[in-house]
Amino acid sequence: RKEVEQDPGPFNVPEGATVAFNCTYSNSASQSFFWYRQDCRKEPKLLMSVYSSGNEDGRFTAQLNRASQYISLLIRDSKLSDSATYLCVVPAAGNKLTFGGGTRVLVKP
Amino acid sequence: DGGITQSPKYLFRKEGQNVTLSCEQNLNHDAMYWYRQDPGQGLRLIYYSQIVNDFQKGDIAEGYSVSREKKESFPLTVTSAQKNPTAFYLCASSIGGDSPLHFGNGTRLTVT
Image (cartoon, each protein chain N blue to C red):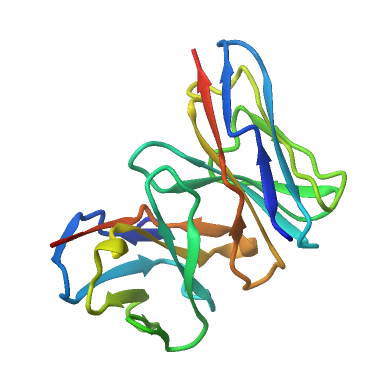
């Protein structure tokens, strides 16, 4: 099993709809998790940090399921500008921060 | 303004040449990282350093070397031993521990 896995998508989402996708991880000792947004040919930018069961920031909600070892990201009322690749990051042993392959989201009018 | 600076933004080299990518941060962060990204792929960890004068191999360290002589600087050398060096290289830093990463703008390396 890979250390961090994501569904690559693309998730085609109508504008205004809700979309959710998961990130599974193998290191059960991980305590913190991060979601990043990456636009085409740009550097990733931090979207949200998750240190406990979840976090919410406006239209974005992250939830952590430790028992099943996955974190999810939910986007409500999707905007065209939400089109991007969403990367999850999970610390592995020795503070090695490992990225998933990313989930591509395309919001369409 | 505090941040991470990678230079140059675009770099072209001939096969067989070593090339060094610069990464400087003025965030006073202890930890620094180098990642490689290929088209349509996620980020893969090359090397990371949690403190000055110490660094560890990541998942794809072969063909790369780094140094961490100063807290602010973490240069990456792509050697001729790296079989497929053409990629987007991203440098990042963090306070350390469970803290998130802050990224530079990246360097696009093309080797022909």
